[in-house]
Structures are given as structure tokens and as C-alpha cells.
Length: 172
Image (cartoon, rainbow, N blue to C red; front, top):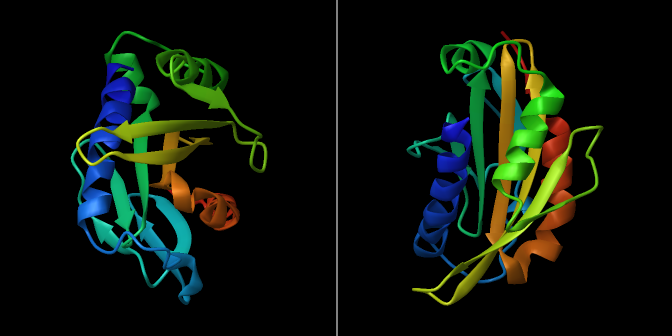
């Protein structure tokens, strides 16, 4: 559970990388050809503008010049090892909401999956980023998938973030 909060904090810091990874212009990475990625039991359809990235604190990450997708898988076994037996999806959702209650607002569910929306100001770069976090349940635990971009690009990317969120699936 502490890992979720730490990971959310890492996401805020890692998004600074987004600004340094390429153009901060308005080139929409979702205009490229669709591409399905599959790693660590999660499948997601993004575009060829994204590439898989190893990001500390995340199970998997995908970055384009102006957008990033971060995914964290937390298993029920990990919760049990931490002393939290039989954690339900509803409990996981509530934990994530409480851990982020100071900055996040509850968004509309996407295909029944709970969402959170929040902004992060990178003071060093004076750039605000917006995150759409979608929570999922899989056979062995839970996934937190975050879609992020500069706030100025978010409205243009949001429909594509939602479509990508709808494409997420899990395998054993």
C-alpha cells in the first residue's frame, strides 16, 4: 500500500522527464498508427509514437514525446505479505483515493473502472501536468494505469486516453 503512494509520487517526478524527452509542442502522439503493447500480463493499444520505457517504481511504462502511460501492478500476495489479507478491489480503490485525497478528484468511471484526475505543477520547469488514473482488477491483484500530458495538451488527448484505457486487458 505504501508502494502505491510512493509510486504516485514517483509519477509526479517522472513526468518531468516527459518535458525533457522531446518536443513540448502540440504534436498529438495519438495521430500515429495504432499499436498494441503487451508486457507483464497487461495489454494496451496506444500508437507507434509510444515506446516501452523502464521507469523505476512502475511495472511498465510507455512514453511518446508529449504523453506518457505508467502502469503499476500490485498483487494480492504483496498485500498479504504486508499484512493486508483478502484486500478487495473496493478497498484498493478507497486506499488509492485516500492516499491522493489532497490533490485528486474522482472522475467518471471508464467501462466501470474507477478514475482519478489530478494536476501536478513542476515548479522547476513551471509546467503543469494532468493525470488520468484508471484502476483495474485482475485475477491476481490490481493495476493502476496513469495517462499523463502537459495540462495544455490534456483536453486534446483525453478522448485518446479514454480509448486507450478501454483497450486495457490482462492475462495470466
